[in-house]
Amino acid sequence: MIIASQEGTVPQEGTVLQAGTGPEGICEVNCVHPEAVAEARAALPDGRDVETASAFLKLVADPTRLRLLSALNTRELCVCDLAAVVGLSESAVSHQLRLLRAGRVVAFRKAGRVAYYRLLDHHVTTLIESALEHARE
Image (tube, rainbow, N blue to C red; front, side, top):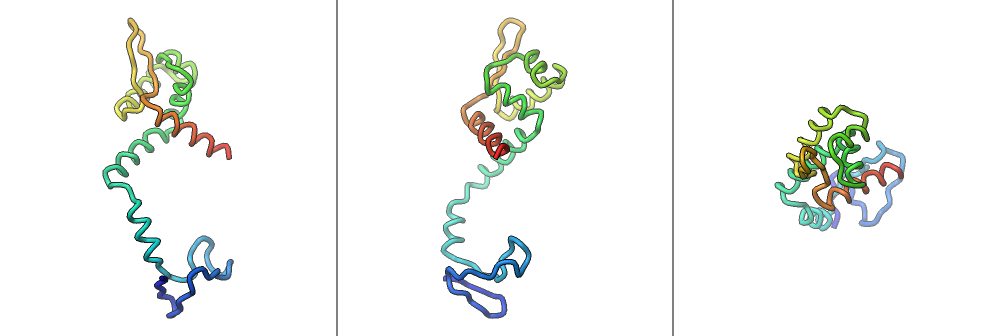
């Protein structure tokens, strides 16, 4: 079922409208497909999950943090090694790692006076690899 409101016209479902007569990417008629809307609404994640995922994506979207995470995707590294890999001071790297630790993206272990960082779980690895693969396409 299609509900339309532009000039009283109701196109038949599956009708292909003429391309190029309106702004690109915008429907040329205002119609709602109730079944499609209901299906999409039912698939929406819980609001709390959306907020948490959004905060996570915001955290890892920073170029410096993404480089740090990419380095940690290869192996566990200490702050000194990470600083050398990304070309930043140890202080700058430590600041970024604190943010990533607070966001539960990385964890560390102490070996004497050295702190070794690692990615917290496979979800982070999957996200990094997918984002970089998408960027290469």
